[in-house]
Amino acid sequence: MISSPAVERRSIRGHYNLSTLFYRMLWGPHLHHGLWRADESAWVAQVHLTEKLAELAGIHGGEKILDVGCGMGGSSIHLAKKLRCHAEGVTVSPFQQKWATLSAGWHGVSNLTRFQCLDVEQAVFEPARFDVVWSVECTEHLFDKPRLFQNACAWLKPGGRVAICAWLAGEELQRAEQIQQVKDVCDGFFCPSLGTSSDYVAWMEQAGFRMQHVEDWTDRVYRTWEICRDRVRRFRIRSIARLIDQETVVFLDRFDTILDAYKTGAMKYGCFVAQKPV
Ligand SMILES: C[S@@+](CC[C@H](N)C(=O)[O-])C[C@H]1O[C@@H](n2cnc3c(N)ncnc32)[C@H](O)[C@@H]1O
Image 1: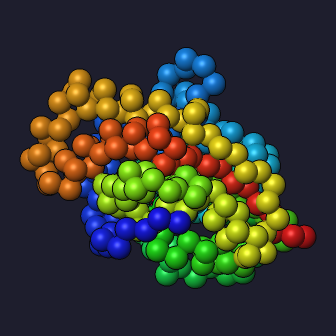
Image 2: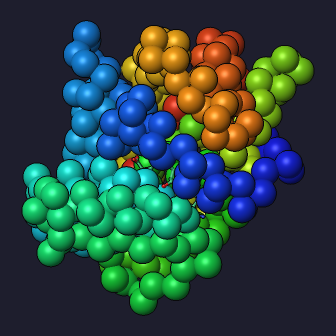
Image 3: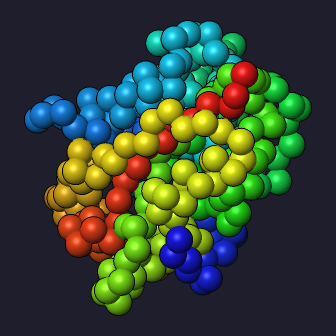
């Protein structure tokens, strides 16, 4: 795991309050990478990532899902609409919580979804409440990642699954340049640390899960940042960000850092599904 001690809790909340609108303009309602099969649009690729994770997690319909780091509710609303799942989303951003709630109403799934502004690291849920603990690109922001998996194991029913997509550090990085790239990504994107794929497997197994899927999707998600970087240039989004705050400008400038980190192998993108024993 590579850590960046400079990242603070309040800056993560501030970042999502301020930049959610940029993400929405640049990318859409899903605040996560696209997963490409061929030359489909970015939107199709984003939905495909959600559907692929749902397939690997064995979500067939009607499950109770905890969506950790729910953003604008993209995954929860999709799973509610397509599979009639009951989704509870948590986000640290009050702005996102309101957006997700309004969006669920717009999509006609208010009765199947609920969004709370809550730090998952402080959250308490009753034992065995969920069938699936789902988290797409949120664990990067957690200060105590192993603890999430211990909690998730308690919150899940026996046989329940944890389904995760996460930005990762490459395994056993030696070169100073690669380590610096991961630290720059952590600072620019407000991640206290990035774990490796082996770290995630160890944290899940130590929490009592049995691994079902561990996949490296790096090559299939890489295009996300090329598209975002091109859109920032085309729509002059950097000039708008300058009016808001310097941290948002730094965040936009770090799109190249993340592309470089993927190119050198400093960063990877992983998908994990693990089951709580029956
Ligand atoms: C990159 S976005 C992903 C959003 C969503 N999963 C999606 O795929 O559209 C990261 C999300 O994690 C949330 N987050 C970060 N730290 C969190 C914490 N400690 N507790 C709850 N949510 C958190 C942010 O508020 C944001 O919604």
